[in-house]
Each structure stands twice: as C-alpha cells, then as structure tokens.
Image 1 (cartoon, protein in one colour):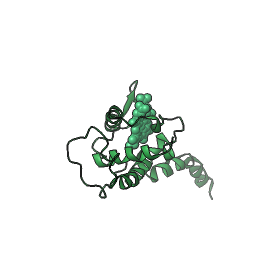
Image 2: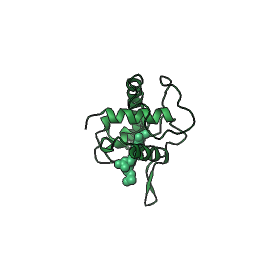
Image 3: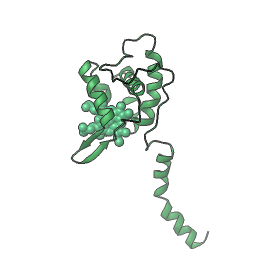
Image 4: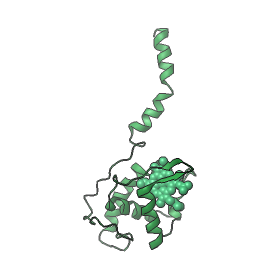
Length: 142
Ligand code: HEC
C-alpha cells in the first residue's frame, strides 16, 4: 500500500460504519408490504381494527413486526424494548384516545424545539401498515 492509499483508507474509516447502517435500510423509511391484509379504505379509522379481530390479528402482528423493525426499532428499540432514546411504546395504553395519539404521532412525527426527533410517516405507510405496527407493539410483553 502506498502512503497515499493508506491516508485515503484512514480517512474513509469513520465513514464506513455510517454507510453500513444506511446500507441496511435502517436510516431511510421503508415501505411495508400489506398485501396480506384487506384494504381498510381511504377514511382513517378511529381505533385499531385488528385488536379484536381473531381472523386478522396474527397476520397483522406478522406484517407489523416487519414494519416496526424496518421503521421504528432503530429509535424505539428492538422488540419494542426502548433503550432510552425514544419512549417505550409498550407503555402506551390500548384505548381509543391512545389509538388517536398513536396515529397522529406516526403520521406527523415529532419536532421538539425546532428539531425533528421523529420523521413523519404520512404518505409512506398506509393505514393497514400503521395499525399492523400498533398490533405488533401491543403483542409485545411489557
Ligand atoms: C428517528 C427516531 C425515531 C423513529 C425512526 C421513530 N420514532 Fe417515534 N418517537 C421518537 C421520539 C424521540 C419520540 C418522542 C418525541 C417527543 O419527545 O415528544 C417519539 C414518539 C413516538 C410516539 C409517542 C409516544 C408517547 O409516549 O407519547 C409514538 C406513538 C411513536 N413515536 C411511534 C413510532 C412508530 C410507530 C415508528 C415507526 C413507524 C416511530 N415512532 C419511528 C423517535 C423516533
């Protein structure tokens, strides 16, 4: 290795881990394939339609698990166990007002003091994907 090549290699070292993170798709929001769930329509529902649906719940959890891991886990923690970087989503209650709060947060993201702490998922995740993620989160033990 020439000295020049050595210098270039050393300069690139700090970049490599960052490239690895983004290369795995952990950085950019990922679309979620919801083809296993019937379309819920354009109108946003007020509550999670899969919570008490015996037939669709298991499919929703499976799709939600994929959606959560590719879009939320890097901040909210693997298996929804927060490492302290973002709130522990298992602690959000399962009622109607919590559902509304959940949807509002996921669609709008969170900006605190002018800094974006969570990106908005409006236009990226459809209603099926967001309720599936909610169903997955609720399926994780506290
Ligand atoms: C870049 C990091 C990041 C990503 C990615 C992210 N979040 Fe968040 N999220 C945060 C932070 C930080 C907060 C707390 C914001 C605040 O201080 O109000 C938050 C807040 C929330 C809240 C409100 C929690 C509460 O207790 O009030 C919900 C619900 C939520 N996120 C769901 C999600 C879901 C679902 C995803 C994936 C689709 C996601 N987040 C992706 C960082 C993130």
